[in-house]
Image (cartoon, rainbow, N blue to C red):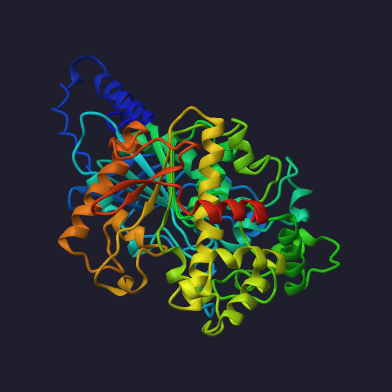
Length: 532
C-alpha cells in the first residue's frame, strides 16, 4: 500500500457513514454537517506489507528499528527455513533495536541474545527524493558465531546520508542455530536440505526488501548486498544460491569471499553436537536437538571466537537446494546470480585476530614451523615456509599474520574474483584496503581486519580520525553509493578485474592501481589448499 492510499476498511466505513447520513424520510432530513478535517499522517510512520511501523528522526535520516522479516525461529521452527511474519494491527514502534541472535560473548563466557532475533533496521532519507534511492543491504561479521546488526559500529546514518541510499542491516541466526548441517534435519525437509539457515534468513530479508523498500524511498531494482568477514561469505552464498535470484543487483565482499565447510568438518561438527547435547543414539535426533536449551546450543564447541580443541565450525555447506555447489564453481560456470561485484581485503588482515589463535608468543623459527605444521600439515609447511622466511619478519607472530592472511583472506578473494570473471560479463573489481590510522585503538594493528568498517560506516569505533581519514571515508562512502546506484564505482582508478593482469585498487587517501597481489603465495595456496 502506498503512503497516499487509505486502507480498504476505512474507505468502506466512510462510504457506509455517508449512506446512513443521507438516508431518512420526509421533512426530518437534516443537511450533513461539514466533515471533520482529516488528521495529518505521521511522516515517520511507514506502511509495509505486514503492517505500519513508526521510526524516529536522526539528522536528515529516519531510522526504523527492529522490523520483523520472519517469524521467531523458536521451538519447532528451530533449524527450519524462516517462516512468514504474522501481520500486526496498529502501528509498531521502531524506536528500539531488537535483541542480538543467541551467542556467546566475545570472551566465550556468557550467553547473550535471544532466538527471537530475525529483525532488520532501516535508515531512510527524512525528506522525499525525486526518484527512488539505491539500497545498501548489510550483513555483519563475526565468524558466523558472534555479532549483531545492533552494534554501534553499524549505525548507518552517516552511510545513508553520504551514499544517498537507503541502508538496511539485518540479524541472522548464528553458530549452530544458523549453520548446523545435521542429516536429521535433511530427512524432514522437503528439499532434503540441511544447514544454511542463516543464508535462508538473508533471503527472507531480501524478499522483505522487494516487498517493502519502495515505501521507505528505496529502489528494489538497485539493491547492493554487502558484508564484512562472515558477512562477505554470506554475500558470496547469495551470489551462488538460486533461491536469491532477482533479489539483488550488486554484491560487495569485504575481507572474505566464498567459504564452504569441507564434508569432514561437517561430520566432525555433527558428531560433536550430538555428543555435547546428549543426543547420540536418540530415536529422534532432530527432536532431541530441538529439546535442548538455547544456552546449551550456544555453548557448543566451535560457537565462540575462543579456540576449541574439538574440530567444529559453522559456515555454509553444499546442500543441493540453497547451495547446489560451491559458489566459486557456480560462478565459474555462469550458473550464479550474475551482478557487478567488488571484492577486497585489508592489507594487514590478521594483525588484529592472530592473538586469538595463539596460546603463547612465537619467538623462534622452530616454533613457527611447529605451528604451521600443526595447522596445515607437514607437506604444506615444507612448501610454504620458504615463501615466508622467518628472518624477513620482525617476529614469528608477524610471519604467521602474513601466512594466515594469505590463506584465509587474500588468496580466497583472488579465487572468487577469478571465478566471477570466468563466468560473467558484468564487471568485477578488486581492492586492497591500505588506509592506516594514526590514533585510536586500531592504530596498533595497521590496516587490519575490521578496520574498513570504521570508514564505511564512518562510526570510527577504533580510530580517532584525522581530517585525512574523514576525507578518505567520505570518498569511500561516495564510491559505494555510486556502485549501488550504477554497478560501477565511477572512478577511472578502478580497473575491471581480469585474469591476465590481476589488477586491484590500493584504497587509501592517495589510491593507486597495482597488479598481482600476493600472486606467488596465492599460486601455492591454490595448489595445496584450494578448498580451505
